[in-house]
Length: 387
Ligand SMILES: Cc1ncc(COP(=O)(O)O)c(C=O)c1O
Image (cartoon, rainbow, N blue to C red):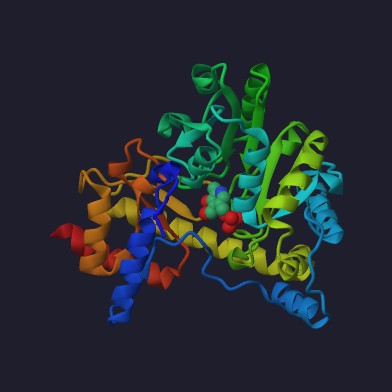
């Protein structure tokens, strides 16, 4: 058979951290002790009430497809969650259940983007978004952001970069890789600016729930004419279950349903039954305890990295990441990550996973491991940096 690969694939980059992870695993297989500070998922296993609900559904024979947009009971539970968490009223019909927020972002962008349409994103930012836009033959406009705007977009930047071909703005708050969060006022001003351009606003709220100090506001508190994407992966600790959702304005529901039927038929049935249990008081108690642990880890790592001499352009408000400037030590953060892994067994994500803007000067540390482990990692980094 001839080897035929679509041209667009040359513009889809892998996660560079996968190289680091593969190398770390190979070193582990050879008996090396590795401290993982690169992994973007909670180390905790899924809370037991969720696991039990998934198993129960399997034993009860609930193994068939669900409607493409999800189980009615899960859509109702998600709508209720918005009511209790943000005091906003959502019609369960507006909830579209998807295979993770990855599925949500692909589905949503697919109903919005024509070839040549532009989508404004941040650089640094979550890398898959620009690839999703590319897959649709759209153009990702990666707007450079830095500490001066808390690594988020502003109305002025939107105005500067918006042109006749721009269709949407896609942001995350708290963001990956910086953990920087938009205030309610900031969210509101971004929504107004996008409205002025008659564009579409998409807010990825996947790290909501994992916030330390400041309250996370949902874009839905300020407008019912925005798309919100979220997931059970991070706060709810269900990465492997692959369940996420979109809250959509009513006008788009029919198109989302139609394409969901075609793209994935439905989200995993077992996972959806598990997800319903994610909102129970028993699960919420477990998740709040874990959030507190993440907060302690954040405080520990933030202090430790600053003591080592890393620059921290913005203290993270949420998620489980610290984005660091490493130019005091290197001008190539990718090689630096590789060297650190080889010489110390500490795995970190290089800046180039999140874009190109100042990428070689930055790294992302994830505090998805225990404080004891992080102490070990910091000790090794201290020795390495003294050389
Ligand atoms: C900002 C952001 N959005 C979306 C995702 C995708 O997550 P999932 O598909 O597991 O919901 C991630 C994963 O790391 C992320 O960091």
